[in-house]
Image (cartoon, rainbow, N blue to C red):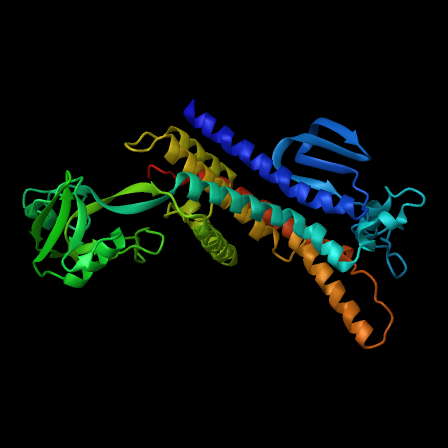
Length: 435
């Protein structure tokens, strides 16, 4: 039941995000006088709709997106209309006719292509910017109101032994871990490691790495009293992890290890509220991380294909709606000590932050039918007009984006293929919180 509730919460959040994205297009378009016959959330059969001031607002059966229908997205042809061999208009010409057919007598000025370049940019940027604002607001609520998950200097675990690099349990011949031999206990808060003041877990990890195997005095707070113990780290083969914390594997799929000073202690993980001034930096970090994923998306999709059909390890940064729904369900249903309502709420909001930032960045890709394709067209139109003005040539008029329809269909097919691949991978080789 909890799993279903998590999926439902995500679905509602996603639908609201899509509705607000389309509202970001709708409001400026109507403000600038563009005729807008439809504002719809979802695709397929209409479940409910109501027409207000010439615009039909409604919900459709498949909540996998949405759209605002703006009349006159494609300008009339400047040359004689192309026709097929059978005498009918070409595909591009049919799209132009469809874009203008809902303009009544005297409404020609309400076509989208008549807008100035700045107004076109405002209309097309309105949707993605709305997703950026949603991401920023949710991130602020999460960071300031609930907290950001961070490692603390309080010990959550002390290993009993120094296991082999590939082992997870202690064997009879495994030596005691340095932490256990020194008497460190779960719940101890590290105050000082050698000469390093322990403000956060990074200070502790850095001090351990710098100290090597030298015996080191460690001051801990244990039940309100400071206790000093001497820890002598050992060199052990430990798995190498990447920037996201995932184990690095070699060509054979085996974990890569390297010798490191080893103590056998682990920190606790808890939410720490952040000051409001930290939010802009966090938004920027989320944005740049999402841009990196989008820029490397082709390579990542190849890796997803290998994982789906070859059983390899999944990239946690790339999931489809099926995978995101699974994660949302697990957030709501997975049991864990110290994982209560606050932690679940923070994780669910973080998931919605990621989704909205992904919608923002992905929609800025300069390809039709994405918003970025229309934005690129408007920018090219503005550049052409500026060059013509400087060269004292006639106004070249609006950019004929209808001529890009064949490429648009290729992009749509690629997006459908990507969605199918991700859905398949999310089913046969899913990413889960429980591993």
